[in-house]
Length: 238
Image (cartoon, rainbow, N blue to C red; front, side, top):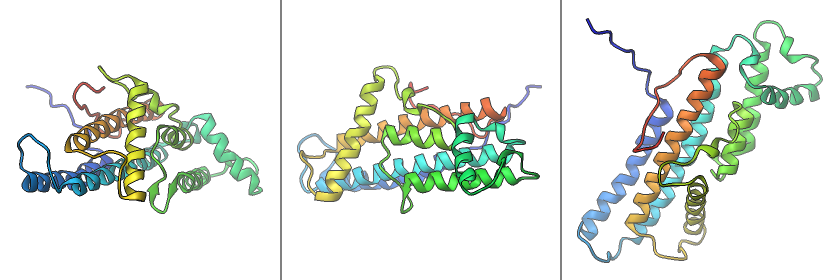
């Protein structure tokens, strides 16, 4: 009799971004209804494309924040000692405790160290998350958030796949961030936004999200010997 492999549960942050991205798909359905599916220049749909760009980056912001928080929560829930977190994370958390007057936080009885690390989580999220939204989800800020919260260093270094170099992938994400900024703050963008642009940025976010998720799962396994969620694939992305 064949042995059935137990599937890991789906990641809650993946389910959430899939739900959020359905809003972009809805805008594209309206785009099709208004302008048709044929080739040629489309009129009166710029507002749909611009709205889709804003929602796409909002999906990415929420995803990065949720993934970081979920990774931390899993690690601390399965941890038997603070050593499950890399030394540089403990060093950052320890500085805050030292300033508060405590002595050796990592030798506290019972689960005192978990309380200290949870306070560290809140401080790091307050640092990078502004009014409930990840503040500028650039590669640099992603690297800092994941490094300081769970110890995943240089996360964006893995943002590449066949046909897409790391530098180019980072540049495309920055282009999306800047385009969203133009639309959000000035309404107009420096150049027209087309449906193909929306589709390209959606694909970019799906690829980056897949890589970041899988890197985080690998880190959690290395530190805790547990696998919290299934790995994902998107096209040829690892």
